[in-house]
Image 1 (tube, rainbow, N blue to C red):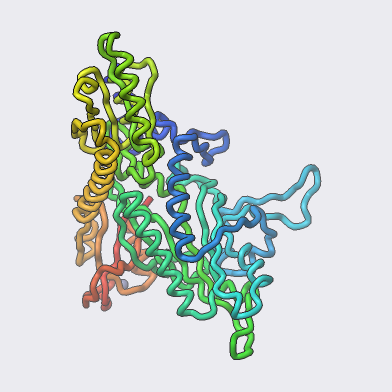
Image 2 (image 1 turned 90 degrees about the vertical axis):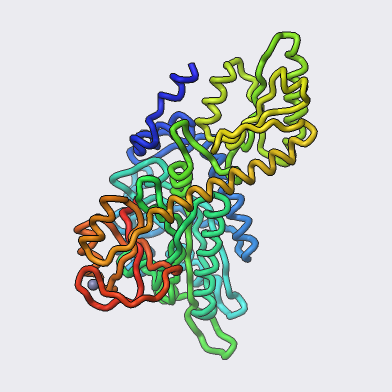
Length: 479
Ligand SMILES: [Zn+2]
Protein backbone atom coordinates (compact mmCIF):
# COMPACT_ATOMS: atom_id res chain seq x y z
CA UNK A 1 0.00 0.00 0.00
CA UNK A 2 2.70 2.38 1.15
CA UNK A 3 4.70 1.69 -1.98
CA UNK A 4 1.87 2.27 -4.49
CA UNK A 5 0.96 5.54 -2.86
CA UNK A 6 4.45 6.96 -3.21
CA UNK A 7 5.19 5.68 -6.71
CA UNK A 8 2.27 7.65 -8.07
CA UNK A 9 4.48 10.72 -8.20
CA UNK A 10 7.43 11.00 -10.56
CA UNK A 11 10.94 10.97 -9.05
CA UNK A 12 12.20 14.50 -8.46
CA UNK A 13 15.71 13.60 -9.55
CA UNK A 14 14.49 12.06 -12.82
CA UNK A 15 11.71 14.33 -14.03
CA UNK A 16 11.49 17.58 -12.09
CA UNK A 17 8.75 19.01 -14.24
CA UNK A 18 6.42 16.05 -13.87
CA UNK A 19 7.29 15.66 -10.19
CA UNK A 20 6.34 19.30 -9.67
CA UNK A 21 2.87 18.89 -11.21
CA UNK A 22 2.29 15.48 -9.56
CA UNK A 23 3.14 16.80 -6.11
CA UNK A 24 0.93 19.87 -6.44
CA UNK A 25 -2.05 17.80 -7.54
CA UNK A 26 -1.52 14.92 -5.08
CA UNK A 27 -0.83 17.17 -2.10
CA UNK A 28 -3.91 19.17 -3.05
CA UNK A 29 -2.17 22.51 -3.24
CA UNK A 30 -3.86 23.55 -6.49
CA UNK A 31 -5.92 22.29 -9.40
CA UNK A 32 -6.61 23.26 -13.00
CA UNK A 33 -9.36 25.66 -13.96
CA UNK A 34 -11.44 25.56 -17.16
CA UNK A 35 -9.66 28.54 -18.66
CA UNK A 36 -6.09 27.83 -19.71
CA UNK A 37 -3.51 29.44 -17.47
CA UNK A 38 -5.70 29.89 -14.43
CA UNK A 39 -5.44 27.78 -11.30
CA UNK A 40 -7.58 27.02 -8.29
CA UNK A 41 -5.64 27.23 -5.05
CA UNK A 42 -7.00 24.53 -2.75
CA UNK A 43 -7.28 24.90 1.05
CA UNK A 44 -3.87 23.35 1.80
CA UNK A 45 -2.16 25.58 -0.76
CA UNK A 46 -4.10 28.60 0.39
CA UNK A 47 -3.15 27.95 4.03
CA UNK A 48 0.48 28.06 2.88
CA UNK A 49 -0.17 31.41 1.17
CA UNK A 50 -1.96 32.73 4.27
CA UNK A 51 1.14 32.00 6.34
CA UNK A 52 3.26 33.82 3.76
CA UNK A 53 0.83 36.74 3.89
CA UNK A 54 0.73 37.04 7.66
CA UNK A 55 4.49 36.82 8.15
CA UNK A 56 5.30 39.21 5.32
CA UNK A 57 2.50 41.58 6.31
CA UNK A 58 3.92 41.80 9.83
CA UNK A 59 7.22 42.95 8.30
CA UNK A 60 5.41 45.57 6.19
CA UNK A 61 3.61 46.91 9.25
CA UNK A 62 6.85 46.97 11.23
CA UNK A 63 8.37 49.19 8.52
CA UNK A 64 5.49 51.66 8.65
CA UNK A 65 3.20 50.49 5.86
CA UNK A 66 -0.59 50.25 5.87
CA UNK A 67 -2.89 48.12 3.74
CA UNK A 68 -5.61 49.42 1.44
CA UNK A 69 -7.61 48.04 -1.45
CA UNK A 70 -7.85 49.59 -4.91
CA UNK A 71 -10.14 48.64 -7.84
CA UNK A 72 -9.61 45.74 -10.24
CA UNK A 73 -10.33 47.75 -13.40
CA UNK A 74 -8.84 50.88 -14.87
CA UNK A 75 -9.73 52.89 -17.98
CA UNK A 76 -7.42 52.41 -20.94
CA UNK A 77 -6.52 56.13 -20.97
CA UNK A 78 -5.13 55.83 -17.46
CA UNK A 79 -2.88 52.88 -18.26
CA UNK A 80 -1.60 54.79 -21.32
CA UNK A 81 -0.36 57.78 -19.31
CA UNK A 82 3.10 56.39 -18.66
CA UNK A 83 4.41 55.47 -22.13
CA UNK A 84 7.11 52.96 -21.19
CA UNK A 85 4.81 51.33 -18.67
CA UNK A 86 1.97 50.73 -21.14
CA UNK A 87 4.36 49.48 -23.82
CA UNK A 88 5.76 46.95 -21.37
CA UNK A 89 2.41 45.58 -20.27
CA UNK A 90 0.23 45.98 -23.41
CA UNK A 91 0.84 42.48 -24.84
CA UNK A 92 -0.52 40.78 -21.73
CA UNK A 93 -3.40 43.01 -20.64
CA UNK A 94 -6.91 41.51 -20.52
CA UNK A 95 -9.74 43.89 -21.39
CA UNK A 96 -13.35 44.35 -20.37
CA UNK A 97 -15.22 45.73 -23.39
CA UNK A 98 -18.89 45.17 -22.59
CA UNK A 99 -21.24 45.34 -19.62
CA UNK A 100 -24.25 43.14 -20.13
CA UNK A 101 -25.31 43.76 -23.72
CA UNK A 102 -23.84 47.25 -23.87
CA UNK A 103 -20.52 48.01 -25.47
CA UNK A 104 -18.42 50.26 -23.16
CA UNK A 105 -17.44 53.68 -24.50
CA UNK A 106 -13.88 53.11 -23.25
CA UNK A 107 -12.49 49.66 -22.69
CA UNK A 108 -11.27 48.80 -19.21
CA UNK A 109 -8.06 47.00 -18.36
CA UNK A 110 -7.95 44.32 -15.70
CA UNK A 111 -5.00 45.50 -13.60
CA UNK A 112 -1.73 43.83 -14.63
CA UNK A 113 -0.17 45.89 -11.79
CA UNK A 114 -1.45 49.03 -10.08
CA UNK A 115 1.04 51.92 -10.50
CA UNK A 116 -1.50 53.84 -12.61
CA UNK A 117 -4.29 53.23 -10.11
CA UNK A 118 -2.26 54.27 -7.07
CA UNK A 119 -0.79 57.20 -9.02
CA UNK A 120 -4.24 58.55 -9.82
CA UNK A 121 -5.32 58.51 -6.19
CA UNK A 122 -1.98 59.78 -4.89
CA UNK A 123 -2.32 62.89 -7.06
CA UNK A 124 -5.56 63.58 -5.17
CA UNK A 125 -4.39 62.63 -1.69
CA UNK A 126 -0.95 64.20 -1.65
CA UNK A 127 -0.88 67.99 -1.37
CA UNK A 128 1.79 68.94 1.12
CA UNK A 129 5.17 67.68 2.33
CA UNK A 130 3.25 66.78 5.49
CA UNK A 131 1.41 64.04 3.53
CA UNK A 132 4.71 62.31 2.82
CA UNK A 133 5.87 59.64 2.85
CA UNK A 134 2.76 57.78 1.81
CA UNK A 135 3.40 54.09 2.45
CA UNK A 136 0.63 51.79 1.22
CA UNK A 137 0.38 48.14 0.28
CA UNK A 138 -2.40 46.00 -1.12
CA UNK A 139 -2.96 42.25 -1.19
CA UNK A 140 -4.82 41.35 -4.36
CA UNK A 141 -4.67 39.44 -7.61
CA UNK A 142 -3.55 40.72 -11.00
CA UNK A 143 -3.97 39.34 -14.50
CA UNK A 144 -1.24 39.05 -17.13
CA UNK A 145 -2.24 36.93 -20.12
CA UNK A 146 0.38 34.22 -20.44
CA UNK A 147 0.87 31.65 -23.20
CA UNK A 148 2.90 29.05 -21.37
CA UNK A 149 1.76 28.56 -17.81
CA UNK A 150 2.63 26.36 -14.82
CA UNK A 151 1.08 26.05 -11.37
CA UNK A 152 2.23 28.96 -9.17
CA UNK A 153 5.33 29.72 -11.27
CA UNK A 154 3.45 31.36 -14.11
CA UNK A 155 -0.32 31.73 -14.03
CA UNK A 156 -2.48 34.23 -15.86
CA UNK A 157 -4.07 35.41 -12.64
CA UNK A 158 -1.83 35.39 -9.60
CA UNK A 159 -2.03 36.54 -6.01
CA UNK A 160 0.50 38.99 -4.71
CA UNK A 161 1.05 42.09 -2.70
CA UNK A 162 2.07 45.34 -4.28
CA UNK A 163 3.52 48.15 -2.23
CA UNK A 164 3.32 51.67 -3.62
CA UNK A 165 5.01 54.54 -1.85
CA UNK A 166 5.53 58.26 -2.46
CA UNK A 167 8.36 60.32 -1.00
CA UNK A 168 9.60 63.87 -0.71
CA UNK A 169 13.11 63.23 -2.00
CA UNK A 170 14.91 60.86 -4.33
CA UNK A 171 17.07 59.72 -1.40
CA UNK A 172 14.01 58.78 0.66
CA UNK A 173 12.51 56.82 -2.25
CA UNK A 174 15.80 55.07 -2.94
CA UNK A 175 16.13 54.13 0.74
CA UNK A 176 12.59 52.73 0.70
CA UNK A 177 13.36 50.69 -2.44
CA UNK A 178 16.35 49.09 -0.73
CA UNK A 179 14.58 48.65 2.61
CA UNK A 180 11.83 46.60 0.96
CA UNK A 181 14.33 44.51 -0.99
CA UNK A 182 15.92 43.72 2.39
CA UNK A 183 12.50 42.84 3.83
CA UNK A 184 11.97 40.41 0.95
CA UNK A 185 15.41 38.85 1.33
CA UNK A 186 14.89 38.47 5.07
CA UNK A 187 11.49 36.84 4.56
CA UNK A 188 12.46 34.51 1.71
CA UNK A 189 15.67 33.37 3.42
CA UNK A 190 14.45 33.11 7.01
CA UNK A 191 10.84 31.96 6.53
CA UNK A 192 10.88 30.20 3.17
CA UNK A 193 14.42 28.89 3.78
CA UNK A 194 15.42 29.83 0.23
CA UNK A 195 18.78 31.55 -0.24
CA UNK A 196 18.82 34.36 -2.78
CA UNK A 197 21.25 36.66 -4.52
CA UNK A 198 20.26 40.31 -4.42
CA UNK A 199 21.19 42.84 -7.05
CA UNK A 200 20.09 45.30 -9.69
CA UNK A 201 18.38 44.40 -12.97
CA UNK A 202 19.88 45.46 -16.29
CA UNK A 203 18.09 48.12 -18.38
CA UNK A 204 16.59 45.39 -20.56
CA UNK A 205 15.25 43.41 -17.62
CA UNK A 206 13.97 46.23 -15.43
CA UNK A 207 10.28 46.97 -14.74
CA UNK A 208 8.52 48.95 -17.48
CA UNK A 209 8.52 52.58 -16.33
CA UNK A 210 11.10 52.20 -13.54
CA UNK A 211 14.39 54.06 -13.18
CA UNK A 212 15.89 51.02 -11.51
CA UNK A 213 14.69 47.55 -10.52
CA UNK A 214 16.24 45.49 -7.75
CA UNK A 215 15.65 41.77 -7.39
CA UNK A 216 16.31 38.71 -5.29
CA UNK A 217 17.12 35.64 -7.39
CA UNK A 218 16.83 32.04 -6.20
CA UNK A 219 18.21 28.94 -7.93
CA UNK A 220 15.99 25.92 -8.54
CA UNK A 221 17.27 22.30 -8.54
CA UNK A 222 17.43 22.19 -12.35
CA UNK A 223 19.83 25.12 -12.32
CA UNK A 224 17.29 27.66 -13.50
CA UNK A 225 16.92 30.95 -11.69
CA UNK A 226 13.66 32.12 -10.20
CA UNK A 227 13.05 35.82 -9.60
CA UNK A 228 11.50 35.82 -6.15
CA UNK A 229 10.60 39.47 -5.53
CA UNK A 230 11.37 42.86 -7.03
CA UNK A 231 11.57 46.40 -5.71
CA UNK A 232 11.45 49.36 -8.10
CA UNK A 233 12.77 52.89 -7.81
CA UNK A 234 10.33 54.74 -10.09
CA UNK A 235 11.99 58.15 -9.88
CA UNK A 236 9.50 60.85 -10.89
CA UNK A 237 8.20 58.99 -13.98
CA UNK A 238 4.82 58.13 -12.50
CA UNK A 239 4.65 61.40 -10.54
CA UNK A 240 4.91 63.30 -13.83
CA UNK A 241 2.53 61.02 -15.72
CA UNK A 242 -0.11 61.20 -12.97
CA UNK A 243 0.66 64.71 -11.78
CA UNK A 244 1.50 63.79 -8.20
CA UNK A 245 2.83 67.02 -6.69
CA UNK A 246 3.18 68.53 -3.24
CA UNK A 247 4.00 71.87 -1.75
CA UNK A 248 7.40 71.56 -0.13
CA UNK A 249 8.63 73.36 3.01
CA UNK A 250 10.19 76.05 0.80
CA UNK A 251 6.74 76.79 -0.66
CA UNK A 252 7.55 75.33 -4.09
CA UNK A 253 5.33 72.79 -5.86
CA UNK A 254 7.34 69.62 -6.60
CA UNK A 255 6.81 66.13 -7.98
CA UNK A 256 7.02 63.24 -5.52
CA UNK A 257 9.38 60.29 -5.93
CA UNK A 258 7.74 56.87 -5.97
CA UNK A 259 8.56 53.18 -5.47
CA UNK A 260 6.71 49.92 -5.95
CA UNK A 261 7.54 46.38 -4.85
CA UNK A 262 5.90 42.97 -5.04
CA UNK A 263 6.06 39.31 -4.08
CA UNK A 264 3.61 36.76 -5.50
CA UNK A 265 2.31 33.19 -5.25
CA UNK A 266 5.19 32.39 -7.63
CA UNK A 267 7.37 32.06 -4.53
CA UNK A 268 5.26 29.06 -3.48
CA UNK A 269 6.56 27.37 -6.63
CA UNK A 270 10.07 28.13 -5.42
CA UNK A 271 9.33 26.58 -2.01
CA UNK A 272 7.99 23.41 -3.64
CA UNK A 273 10.89 23.05 -6.09
CA UNK A 274 13.65 23.94 -3.63
CA UNK A 275 12.86 21.71 -0.69
CA UNK A 276 10.85 18.70 -1.92
CA UNK A 277 12.18 15.18 -2.53
CA UNK A 278 11.08 11.92 -4.16
CA UNK A 279 8.48 11.40 -1.42
CA UNK A 280 6.85 14.78 -2.02
CA UNK A 281 6.83 18.23 -0.49
CA UNK A 282 9.01 19.39 2.38
CA UNK A 283 7.61 22.59 3.80
CA UNK A 284 9.66 24.98 5.93
CA UNK A 285 8.20 24.92 9.47
CA UNK A 286 7.69 28.71 9.59
CA UNK A 287 5.15 28.67 6.76
CA UNK A 288 3.91 25.05 6.84
CA UNK A 289 0.11 24.88 7.26
CA UNK A 290 0.64 21.90 9.59
CA UNK A 291 3.93 21.92 11.49
CA UNK A 292 3.50 18.58 13.25
CA UNK A 293 1.20 15.64 12.62
CA UNK A 294 0.51 13.22 15.46
CA UNK A 295 -0.05 9.64 14.36
CA UNK A 296 -1.28 7.01 16.83
CA UNK A 297 0.10 3.54 16.23
CA UNK A 298 -2.43 0.92 17.25
CA UNK A 299 -1.33 -2.08 19.32
CA UNK A 300 -3.44 -4.67 21.12
CA UNK A 301 -6.97 -3.41 21.69
CA UNK A 302 -6.26 -3.25 25.45
CA UNK A 303 -3.84 -0.40 24.70
CA UNK A 304 -6.30 1.65 22.65
CA UNK A 305 -7.57 3.95 25.39
CA UNK A 306 -4.09 4.61 26.78
CA UNK A 307 -2.84 5.53 23.29
CA UNK A 308 -5.81 7.81 22.66
CA UNK A 309 -5.18 9.55 26.00
CA UNK A 310 -1.49 10.01 25.29
CA UNK A 311 -2.23 11.38 21.81
CA UNK A 312 -4.73 13.87 23.22
CA UNK A 313 -2.30 14.89 25.94
CA UNK A 314 0.40 15.45 23.33
CA UNK A 315 -1.94 17.47 21.11
CA UNK A 316 -2.98 19.69 23.99
CA UNK A 317 0.57 20.36 25.06
CA UNK A 318 1.42 21.53 21.52
CA UNK A 319 -1.74 23.26 20.34
CA UNK A 320 -0.95 26.67 21.80
CA UNK A 321 2.48 27.06 20.25
CA UNK A 322 2.26 25.05 17.04
CA UNK A 323 0.00 24.26 14.11
CA UNK A 324 -0.57 20.63 15.03
CA UNK A 325 -3.06 18.00 13.91
CA UNK A 326 -3.85 14.40 14.79
CA UNK A 327 -4.55 11.78 12.13
CA UNK A 328 -7.27 9.56 13.60
CA UNK A 329 -8.36 8.11 10.25
CA UNK A 330 -8.72 4.36 9.73
CA UNK A 331 -5.72 4.13 7.39
CA UNK A 332 -2.66 2.09 8.36
CA UNK A 333 0.22 4.00 9.99
CA UNK A 334 2.41 3.31 6.92
CA UNK A 335 -0.17 4.84 4.64
CA UNK A 336 -0.46 7.87 6.91
CA UNK A 337 3.32 8.33 6.97
CA UNK A 338 3.42 8.44 3.16
CA UNK A 339 0.50 10.82 2.95
CA UNK A 340 1.89 13.34 5.41
CA UNK A 341 5.34 13.03 3.91
CA UNK A 342 3.83 13.82 0.51
CA UNK A 343 2.18 16.87 2.03
CA UNK A 344 5.52 17.99 3.43
CA UNK A 345 4.62 18.25 7.11
CA UNK A 346 8.02 18.97 8.69
CA UNK A 347 7.55 16.80 11.78
CA UNK A 348 5.74 13.54 12.51
CA UNK A 349 4.99 12.48 16.07
CA UNK A 350 4.36 8.76 16.56
CA UNK A 351 2.75 7.38 19.69
CA UNK A 352 2.34 3.59 20.03
CA UNK A 353 1.91 1.05 22.86
CA UNK A 354 5.61 0.97 23.72
CA UNK A 355 5.76 4.78 23.79
CA UNK A 356 2.79 4.94 26.13
CA UNK A 357 4.51 2.56 28.54
CA UNK A 358 7.70 4.65 28.38
CA UNK A 359 5.69 7.93 28.63
CA UNK A 360 7.29 9.16 25.41
CA UNK A 361 6.63 10.02 21.78
CA UNK A 362 8.87 9.51 18.76
CA UNK A 363 9.66 12.55 16.62
CA UNK A 364 10.48 11.92 12.95
CA UNK A 365 11.90 14.76 10.88
CA UNK A 366 10.62 15.06 7.32
CA UNK A 367 13.89 16.48 5.97
CA UNK A 368 16.33 13.86 7.33
CA UNK A 369 13.88 11.15 8.52
CA UNK A 370 15.88 11.14 11.75
CA UNK A 371 13.97 9.60 14.68
CA UNK A 372 14.15 10.84 18.23
CA UNK A 373 12.28 9.51 21.31
CA UNK A 374 11.18 12.34 23.57
CA UNK A 375 9.59 12.19 27.06
CA UNK A 376 5.96 13.39 26.84
CA UNK A 377 6.38 16.02 29.59
CA UNK A 378 9.08 17.81 27.55
CA UNK A 379 7.33 17.40 24.18
CA UNK A 380 6.63 21.07 23.36
CA UNK A 381 10.23 22.11 23.98
CA UNK A 382 11.57 19.23 21.87
CA UNK A 383 9.13 19.99 19.03
CA UNK A 384 10.12 23.67 19.04
CA UNK A 385 13.81 22.83 18.90
CA UNK A 386 13.36 20.20 16.22
CA UNK A 387 11.29 22.49 14.00
CA UNK A 388 14.03 25.13 14.30
CA UNK A 389 16.60 22.53 13.26
CA UNK A 390 14.49 21.52 10.25
CA UNK A 391 14.12 25.16 9.22
CA UNK A 392 17.88 25.74 9.54
CA UNK A 393 18.77 22.55 7.72
CA UNK A 394 16.49 23.33 4.78
CA UNK A 395 18.14 26.70 4.38
CA UNK A 396 21.66 25.31 4.83
CA UNK A 397 21.23 22.63 2.21
CA UNK A 398 19.59 25.00 -0.28
CA UNK A 399 22.43 27.45 0.27
CA UNK A 400 25.06 24.77 -0.22
CA UNK A 401 23.37 23.85 -3.50
CA UNK A 402 23.20 27.46 -4.68
CA UNK A 403 26.84 28.15 -3.85
CA UNK A 404 27.92 24.94 -5.59
CA UNK A 405 26.15 26.08 -8.75
CA UNK A 406 27.89 29.42 -9.27
CA UNK A 407 30.57 29.33 -11.91
CA UNK A 408 32.71 31.99 -13.53
CA UNK A 409 33.22 32.30 -17.26
CA UNK A 410 35.69 34.57 -19.04
CA UNK A 411 34.76 33.78 -22.65
CA UNK A 412 31.50 33.06 -24.41
CA UNK A 413 32.72 29.50 -25.11
CA UNK A 414 33.46 28.98 -21.38
CA UNK A 415 30.04 30.37 -20.63
CA UNK A 416 28.31 27.90 -22.92
CA UNK A 417 30.34 24.99 -21.59
CA UNK A 418 29.63 25.92 -17.97
CA UNK A 419 25.93 26.17 -18.66
CA UNK A 420 25.94 22.74 -20.29
CA UNK A 421 28.10 20.93 -17.76
CA UNK A 422 26.47 22.35 -14.67
CA UNK A 423 23.37 24.49 -15.18
CA UNK A 424 23.22 27.30 -12.66
CA UNK A 425 24.39 30.84 -12.10
CA UNK A 426 27.28 32.13 -14.15
CA UNK A 427 29.27 35.21 -13.25
CA UNK A 428 30.69 36.90 -16.31
CA UNK A 429 31.98 40.28 -17.36
CA UNK A 430 29.58 42.34 -19.42
CA UNK A 431 30.21 45.81 -20.82
CA UNK A 432 26.71 47.07 -20.11
CA UNK A 433 25.46 47.17 -23.70
CA UNK A 434 22.00 45.78 -24.50
CA UNK A 435 23.43 44.29 -27.73
CA UNK A 436 25.92 42.09 -25.87
CA UNK A 437 23.21 41.09 -23.41
CA UNK A 438 20.94 40.12 -26.36
CA UNK A 439 23.76 38.15 -27.99
CA UNK A 440 24.31 36.10 -24.85
CA UNK A 441 20.60 35.45 -24.54
CA UNK A 442 20.29 34.39 -28.19
CA UNK A 443 23.30 32.06 -28.03
CA UNK A 444 22.80 30.49 -24.61
CA UNK A 445 19.23 31.14 -23.48
CA UNK A 446 20.64 32.79 -20.36
CA UNK A 447 19.64 36.26 -19.22
CA UNK A 448 21.16 38.69 -16.77
CA UNK A 449 19.44 37.92 -13.49
CA UNK A 450 21.07 40.86 -11.76
CA UNK A 451 24.25 42.81 -11.15
CA UNK A 452 24.84 41.25 -7.74
CA UNK A 453 25.60 43.50 -4.77
CA UNK A 454 27.84 40.86 -3.25
CA UNK A 455 30.27 40.75 -6.18
CA UNK A 456 33.31 42.98 -5.70
CA UNK A 457 34.43 45.51 -8.30
CA UNK A 458 36.87 43.79 -10.63
CA UNK A 459 38.33 44.92 -13.94
CA UNK A 460 37.63 42.61 -16.83
CA UNK A 461 36.47 42.50 -20.41
CA UNK A 462 33.02 41.79 -21.82
CA UNK A 463 32.74 38.15 -22.92
CA UNK A 464 31.03 39.23 -26.16
CA UNK A 465 32.92 42.23 -27.53
CA UNK A 466 35.91 42.59 -25.21
CA UNK A 467 35.02 46.07 -24.05
CA UNK A 468 35.97 46.94 -20.45
CA UNK A 469 33.77 45.88 -17.53
CA UNK A 470 34.09 46.78 -13.86
CA UNK A 471 31.96 44.05 -12.35
CA UNK A 472 30.58 40.62 -13.19
CA UNK A 473 26.89 40.19 -13.93
CA UNK A 474 24.95 37.14 -12.77
CA UNK A 475 23.50 35.10 -15.62
CA UNK A 476 21.21 32.06 -15.74
CA UNK A 477 18.41 30.52 -17.65
CA UNK A 478 15.28 31.41 -15.78
CA UNK A 479 11.74 30.35 -15.01
ZN1 LIG B 1 29.91 43.88 -24.50
